[in-house]
Length: 361
Image (cartoon, rainbow, N blue to C red):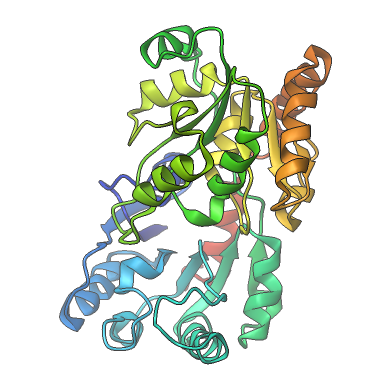
């Protein structure tokens, strides 16, 4: 069987990293032809060409991001042009499902919610799609609410990447960033307001001065919201700018070093579906403190705190950092979880999905 897979490929992007890992495992079972997506808003002809390129496969697989199809603006979205050109059985992995009011379109919240529901129904319940893959359990119900047959949606927890053979140079990272003799709290991945950086910064204000917060990542290339500037303003406003660093985009080796340097990894999300950055930390056996959201409650290997509760986060940080026993227990649980949810296991499920829609015998 030959599979044509549309995804970001040469971008600095979590979906690109996910796709590289998944394809490495898929190639044990099927031939894979990569069709690169774009973050640039493009004419309809470009999206039709993307669909025609997927005809290289017996099955087409799209790693869906709104940004790959021009966003959610009704005049710029290329999804309809793409879907009407599609001529192969289509599997869609839903990486994001925007159902919340953000003010991005300058609409009253009820109107924005109604618009997004209409838009999402047109995309995710499109008859061109044969099957759906999701990594957030909440998406199964959300898709059903848009008209997607629930029995055709496959849920699997987001896979955990294999840890590196050698750990990163945490001591070197600490020296380079002036973090020696500090308690280092790290939030990993691309900057996004929903990740709760502001909650962590507010908690940092009530922690002793040896605690520092490192945002190990930079702005996503598709982000036009000025997140980095906002974070620096928040740190200044809260009086913790001298204990907060944003590294910018990190290459693989430096990301490994930043992970190794962490006393604790924070995932203080205000909202989330699934988190590849959190899984990165678990794969490396780091102690993780995460918001008590539905997806995190499914993880047996993280310490939870009430989402958005600054005092609860500060207390939990001190409890974990102050107890070697607690921290080691979390680290061991993270390693055990990682072995059970690999990309190899996801690839096997994905191939079964292909076979369920393929015209090949």
